[in-house]
Amino acid sequence: MRRFSSIPPVAWIAICAILFFGIILITNKPSSAVFEGYEATAGPTYSVTTLDGKTVTNESLKGKVVLLNVWASWCGPCQAEFPDLIELQEKYGDKGFTIVGLAWNDEESKVRAMVKDRKLNYPIAMAGPELGEELGGLQSIPVSILIDQDGKTRYGAVGFDPKDRPKDKFGRMVRHLLKIKE
Image (cartoon, rainbow, N blue to C red; front, side):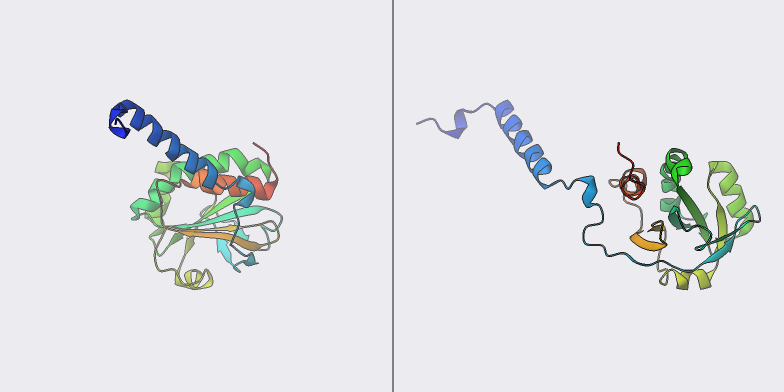
């Protein structure tokens, strides 16, 4: 009796691939469910002065979707996010979205050099321990906090996961909040 042993290895690979992708398709959530299980809460209160001398506050950014991104010049995972954040700002900056980069417990000269070298295209401010406490007590960085047009925190992320890139993860959420269809 010839059972499964008579199936060629290539067929086994094809069967496994079909099952794998079938499971992915079945369990994948649509972009409209990006906030499932995450309840909107009051956003942080902050007032920072950007490197170019402008004051940015939670009140001044109401009406925009804001991604607060806490980073430091010595943080490799923070730097790994920069290309995605630059792309997000380019793509949605004129649609009611902005990133505010917060260089946490860093030296201003190093931050300015990083901004210039990496060509960061969004406002950057220096942030000390007091702002870290306002953001919930920072334990590690990078930290990203997505705030909706009403000033409510809609999502928070700690660390950098190369499998869930910021331009993909936050891009879905920004499009959802701005009601942009893609």
